Amino acid sequence: MSALAVGRFLGSEELGAATLAEIIAQGGPSTATSEDIENAKATIEKILTANELRGGRQLGPSRHVPMKEVIDRLMRTEIEQIHDVRHKIMTIATLGSLHLRLRGDGWPRIRDKAASSHTHWMLFYGAIPIAETLEANAWHTLTALLAMILADDDARELTEALDDLVHASLPGR
Image (tube, rainbow, N blue to C red; front, side):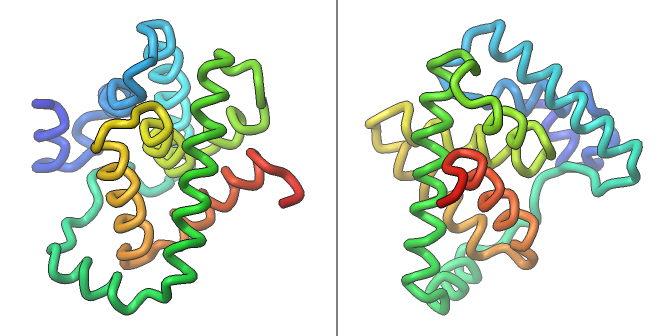
């Protein structure tokens, strides 16, 4: 948590790929074993390092959008778009959870697509806890992902990653 605080204050480039990967991997589903976390950390570090070497945008905390602004943006969003994004998040949550329960042997195309960028990885592992628990925090996670995608200034990267993950989960649909 202290490394995350430093990253938010100084910028994620001050942390480096290894520390960022550790922070992200530790935020995975509660059912993850220590081996799962280590594997996730190695994969994320590889993605972040490759992104850095390509000159890609640094992964870091997103811009804080005040709650009033989020509510205003969501109030202007068509209900069909909210339903579409919710359905896609739930697809990723459900099939991602099944994928992890099968220890990654179930759907290699999901694993490969999730590992293709830090945005894909964040959405994939951000959605899985929704299907992992029936507690109230599943709704909090779903709502947070919905708000993040629908109220973002430039949600193109997030929506493209979400669509990629759904297509990898359900090709042809």
